[in-house]
Structures are given as C-alpha cells and as structure tokens.
Image 1 (spheres, helix red, strand yellow):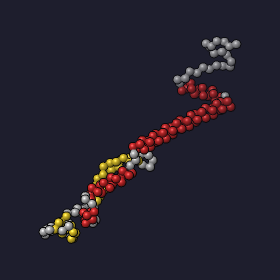
Image 2: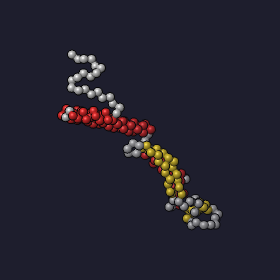
Image 3: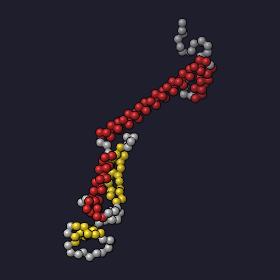
Length: 171
C-alpha cells in the first residue's frame, strides 16, 4: 500500500491492516501476478501463411510506486501496448491477399511443372519401347500375348501378308 500526505509520497506499507491517519491517502496496489489477455489477431508468417495469435501475459508489479504514478491504469496501459505491438506485426488485408495469390500461383506452377515432367517421362518410356521393338521385333509379339492374357483387348493376328478376313483386298 502506498501512503501519500498532502499529495506527496510518504512510504510503502507492507501487506496487512494499517491505521489510516487523517490527511493521508492510502492507495492499494496489486502486486500479485495477474493475467492480461489479448484476443486473437491475424499475422502473416515469413512464408506467407496467415496465422492467428492470441496472448496471455503474466504481469507482476515490481515497483508499486511507479505502477501508480507513471500511468492512470497500468494494466490497461500494458494491454494497449501489447495490442499495438501485435498490430505492428500485422500486415494489411491487401498484402495478405497478394501473399495468398502468390502462394496459390506458386502451387499451380509447381503442379503444371509436375504434369510436364510426367508427360516427358511417359514420352521417354514410349520412345524407349519403340526403340527396343525396332531392335528386337519379337518383343512386340510378347507384348501382344501380354495384352491377350490381360483380357479386355481385341487383338487381330495376321500371318505373313495374307489379308485379314473382312477387309477389302488391296491392289
């Protein structure tokens, strides 16, 4: 407890009951730890993601006289200062939208790149298969047998240069 006489600081009293002499003001100062809660606010991270931050500050009065004399309401002052500091970390809505668009464009670009890589890989596989068949024609017959075995495919086999039944003669 702080004691003032005629508006001037006199002393700090220890916790407990004290007599209050005339013309003296006694001010109770909370010195126990207490929580100051700041509600959630959105903040952008370094990689452009929006996160919500809420804070709970543990506040303890170290100097009761300064707590009382420095500002009107010290807890409100601490709350406002922390909230302003969080706002300094916040990014305006336009920049958040721009960062989200950049992240979306980056993800879409990576998806297009991955599709292109898959297409190149498929084309290489086909080119390798064509080269192998050109070098060893028997592979085509083996592949044909695999297709027949798997089922669901219509395979027309011809022998030599004989016409396939149901096709018009050539020549």
